[in-house]
Length: 354
Image (cartoon, rainbow, N blue to C red):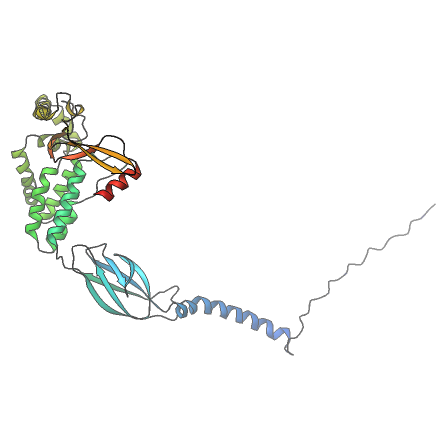
């Protein structure tokens, strides 16, 4: 009979405790808490004091009338109102500039905040009321831009027409130039050839009458449109297009409206036939003068032909109701057209020549 000696369980080794050595005779029990406190104080100092020390100043909020005025601080461009910018403490010369308005310059005192500026920055507001000093140019520019959009056609889901007349009328009315606003609306009326432009016109007309679409003001605004209705039968086409959708279907589906719109489109096309347009509408090329204009550039002869002054029809070229531009006639001045496609080099040469 064999016997096996019982094995004793191995004794587990106890880990040796880690003991920090003293530093400069200071025991760990004293300097470790001190290090933690120093780290916490450093973080707090970095959070609450460093931003105020390195960027001692204020956040200045700039605003103006009109909006989008350029702001300069010490002859350095900062941005367009309304916006906020960080300025260092001290005196700064601020200048507000806007096209058609008189510039305004002033000196401001900016103070700072040393503690907590990262979380509670010091703010101050600076605004300026600019005086309109070129109302004629403002009205002319708005009218030209409004007329440019008239030849684009209807807006789509990819692009929307900007409001042009209403902001211009708003500026003119606030500056007391009601006469210029009246002239702008008067001349813009003939360019209201799409529903988008009509909406802008009606909005501007309402602003002209006080800005609130009340019953009396709405009647006054529509009274301006009646001028076009009385002078141009074609306005029936776009006026029907700006009605609510339910009314549009009822009006455009009426036989008398269809007959009237078809007769208007046919009459417009016929009126242009002496200038080279036949019943097919815009597909017929206008009559070209035989005179040529030759320009020698880059070793090439650029040949141009003169297109005479004539009357063009924009919009639907038949009785169809699906045209994206409401039919209207426009007088076009004489211009020159190059016979071949223009290259970049040729275009640069033409600019240099002219």
